[in-house]
Image (cartoon, rainbow, N blue to C red):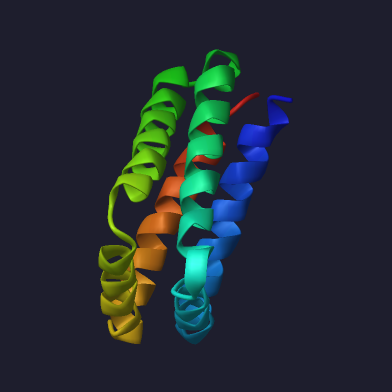
Length: 123
């Protein structure tokens, strides 16, 4: 089961690469999330990822990094549920309006985070 951390890190790297290469695809995904209750899917995913990271952190080569990202993910997921839906939609619309270059820069940050998770993950 500890391979789940590696899989999550790999998925983050893949997502980041897509954002860097094709930010228009990410913009379509953002628009998709603004429909109905789709806003809360990332929140559920974040809570689950956070819990998985916290459970398997001690099996990783650098556990404190996985613990930090696990706490951030879990807190982010819970915080999304505490914010009004309209505010979430406004935030996603704001992100959708950013330039492709800005999204690419965010993709580079996500790529670095994914690579760090892969590096700190289970050996």
